[in-house]
Image 1: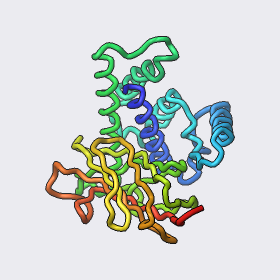
Image 2: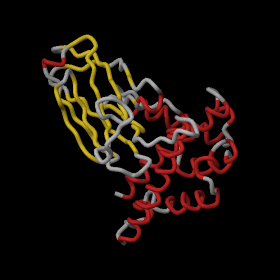
Image 3: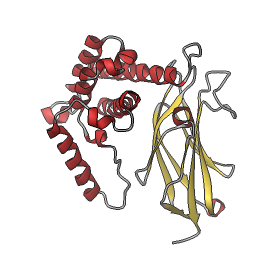
Length: 270
């Protein structure tokens, strides 16, 4: 759906902004953000509201993730020379593309739907182009100029508790140890997002202790893993593999382009 494609792009841009500005200004990059104080206050209020609305869920604490689409475009505009020029090259073009997408961000709010095939194709094409630019940029940041990155990467994984992770190709670790516990009979749900710099089809699968779980193909999707007695342990490792089956080579062992390992405590019962 076009709305989902734009929503996914929003999170890609938030990740990009955090990466670019933290590289420029360090861990306290938010203090250098060129937005009005009213916007920061609004984002803070939204985060607090989200925390109250979803008790028992680890909400995203990053303030930027409570911004709006227009905020993201404005940040890219005002901080262009801080690093976004290296990602998008043409400022006029990217700002125009984002302005076009804004009109399709929430069509229900304007009492209309994306019916025309060309509208859906436009949204799909623009969001795909921008995401691919970001993927290529981050890939190039991860290697030297003489070593272009040919591989897919995990952009984001969110579990059903609300915890967010990135893959080994992004942070060098590709692991997480959530504080929440799992129990036999639970279903571990992972919302996944990835990208390939060459636009190849992605293949995902999750497994624990050698037992295969679910899999899917595509840039985004959901994996459900049912917890059984076999997974019980103080630190059970759940392995999420990202592969590109269209290439005869891979970034990591086991034919993986990227990998995420989650260590959960799994108890036999509550």
